[in-house]
Length: 349
Image (cartoon, rainbow, N blue to C red):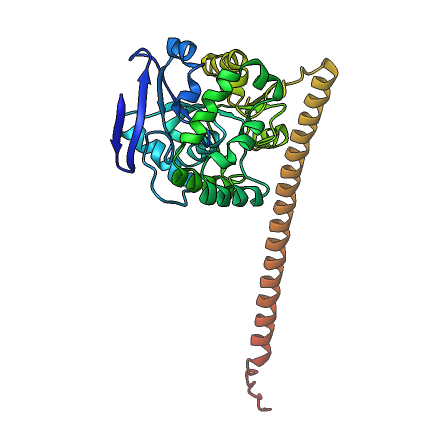
């Protein structure tokens, strides 16, 4: 495809594979370019529409002054997706490309379907080697660091077994713009995604190299532990495991990206405890209890009624007695107060 203009800059992009296939985006390591994936392309393009690009500061892409940040490189990846009208992609990134993948998983989760993070880490434990490397490149150019980097990237056995493959990668490193390399070194040095990467929601495969001194298995296992449900494998290789063990690497990637998605089961509802069948004894006991209760209620009601009736009768009787007493008393009082009739004395004749 050549160069693609995006809102964050111009990038060299190549697209291969069936137009109808799901999209897989490849992101290169520090000091290489999109051709680091050449060994994977024949197999990947059978299953995917593969989009690979040179990261900022590398190959044929924009190489402005830095320092860069992983967030800036992540925004570049999103800008490329937007320019190509890709709503979401699968992701394969190695080393720095894996760091960019972590940023996307945390900050643009809807854009990543599945992600392979190879030979990478969520942070760099020691900044001093990076500062030394930056100074060396500033003073002496890219050639001054090539020998030491190649020693970390490939095992001695592979260097002897396939010197052409090693030289091809060494040429990429030497030809990387010094300004872009230095700026990208700063992005890797300053990165710490140990907290944000926990936000990853997409399925993730972490690949580590058993003999990788740049991002050893300890860092790979730590990264996998931070991402819930992630898969983890190790290959018997150094840092560029996709170059040193191309077949095993490609097989692991394809197996992960094409396996059926895990269906998240909804939490099972707790079943209500089955009702125990009542025994004959229990039924009889229950019926007797109920009958006793009803009888007691009826008796209480009757007793209350009787008491109430007696109380009323007693009250009426008492009231009548009291009224009668009052009447008698009143009558007596009346009689007592009445004046006596005067009797005429008969005169004697």
